[in-house]
Image 1 (cartoon, one colour):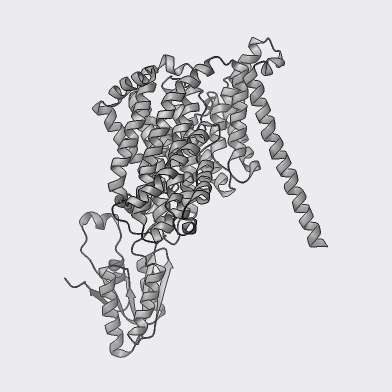
Image 2 (cartoon, each protein chain N blue to C red):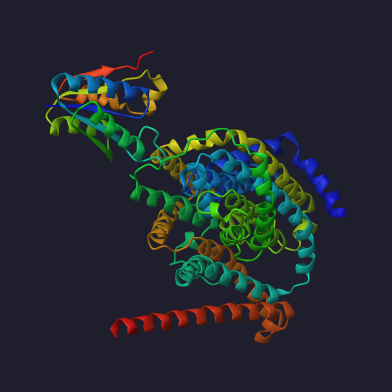
Length: 502
Length: 130
């Protein structure tokens, strides 16, 4: 078990006072943004990107990991107390969690969410420690053609799997790919409009800050005055013996759903939380409580979303493919340090990775210790007037974008892309495909060029590796399902039309 | 004539409401309870819940008075109270006042202060009993 030995070394370097401080900072900040609706870990990481210029790489990554895990925790507090999910991964938690709160069981709901998140996060991180090195050893064998196929699959899955509308997903993906094209990286100027400042392409951080922070701020400004929501007062989270008895199985089942979905391209946290909820509803010994505040309906999904956060790190670290917006920003942060996540990561930057993995355990423990007693304090954050909140966000957004290259032109880009972000929210376009497209689009092009260069321009090289073939088969399968569903929907739509006509 | 009261579900609002009900009872006047919010935060503890609004209506009726509760999202809570006083031809506006720290004054505007300064009719400022 040399993994565990390496992990112990990682733990030692993660537990230095400085790194512990960054871990605490990360989880506090993560919970804070998780609690506030509309502000998520992805936006926070994008805003905090400039710290990567000043802070050593291990500290920055530890803080980012803390924010990621913290966001998953914080989202549940808002879901339960306010019936408004703080994060998309906590949508399902609101269903039973808010009912529990209304029935005076807010403390128990918060407790099962926090402890379930801890259990799932710990198991998930353990699985990550065991799996990631194995996966990366396997990935090392893959050639460029397999990479092209995996990247294509990831892009398709990210766009098609989430959200109700596939069309919107693909529009968002192609917007992202288009933004990724800008620049002269291929030796040819593309979409630069003869503008020398665009020759280096558009920095991913500017895109992320604009879409997340500026877009959201404009969107909130457009809907500023809304009737406040009724919040359920809450005391110290705690659970009775029977609550424990009813919670531990959903925690484990939620973990079992969350981790694999997080590890899959485009798995995300939304699908496993929903599946976990349905499973608990079916298996519950108290089915009559579902819809009225069943603790199982909080325990399962909350475990699932934290396990999926851990799962997300498998493809990120081992292959270099982000499956969530937050992971996409972490990937970009690592690249800005000159670290390329992927198969070589464990060999080239072993110490760093193990420190990061160890810090995940620390972050998880900190979250449990901090969040159980602090839940009432977090709830108070929701009283901050939005103008103050977003003024701060806009300030950091502008500062962060300007600090990338001290170029006023970047602020112009920020505003233009921010308007794009507003338009995307207005028309219900998902944000994730765009961000993933911006990051993975150039990767895909690079790998494709590499594969074709090696084969001397022979296109058949693209399906010369078994992994690539498997990916294309899966890809074809997904496309076929999409097509069949679309045809079926259209047919049922026309048949109802005819019935109406008759 | 009416008595307008700026209400919030806390000791200050309660004190104001009590005083307003007493004042209105003296001359059998209409009571207009204003509970408004700027609606710019996710949660505003000074904005009454639907249940609390029902309670208010019931309390006005229990005092044997005629009245309404204005429960709404507005640009400026102080201005909303003043406007309610002007449109209803109020005789008196009642507000609850509290101690505020210098920092608090710098950051947050004061509804009571706006009402006291802007209202065109007499304003009764009350404090909760200690």
